[in-house]
Image 1: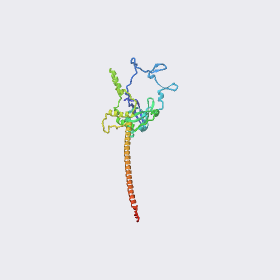
Image 2: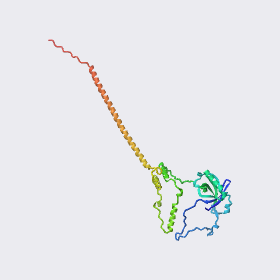
Image 3: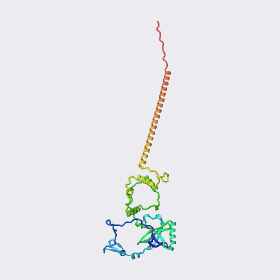
Image 4: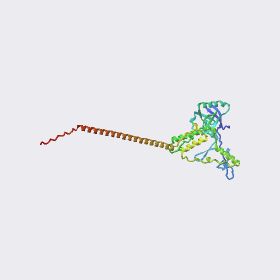
Length: 353
């Protein structure tokens, strides 16, 4: 790989000569602007607006536009005279845990290659020190006319450097989050968890740019004079409004399972059965109603039984009282009969003759 910058890593009093090479490459398909009438290329020419003529690259320099619109020329000598210690040095300023770096700061990635045999030992020393400490190095470096921030970490057996944006270049996320209050229910979170579990992990090396492949196939078809294939209907239709979030999540879980070919019924590949909140509410209401009816029926039966028992007890009590009263009446009559004396009959006197 061709180096784009030569310099050294400053590691305390240790200096490591290195070469900087790009760690990434752009595979996007680029298009040219053409004149639709005849297919001619549309080109941009660098024209001096004062002389109204095209100029070459050798005649072009840098200039800073002031607030009033005037241009202040800046030469390469002006920039070279600036006191930038990182002009040819990647200066390590600190070692921090990797999770201290906000991914929002990540920029272009580079590989650092040891430049020459003498650089192999200090290069290896820094690499192994980073591995053992499980930290990353924060450094400053200058590239393409400006000072930048970088993060050094180990990738396999190579030291990689990620360009970082300066902290003041990260915008605060103001007015980005939804400004309306939304409540997420546990059932919805459970479905989201189920969807994440179903999708699972992925081998990053298996991911590829489907759009680029489709563009390449379309270009190949046009080159050979064939009609390009139409995209499937599913690919043409865009996403609609999510009316029922629960239904959409459940459908996503099913689709993810089908895409993975996971049709087994064992615990490893199963997704937990999820019931709609409305259905759960209906079931709970039906259960409560049935319980209430059972309770009411039981209460009514108990009430009837209690009433019957009370009536029977009252009847028994009444009967006993009646018997007692009758017995008392008989006893009273008998006693009265005994106590009443019999009347004496006085014999009549006969008249004497």
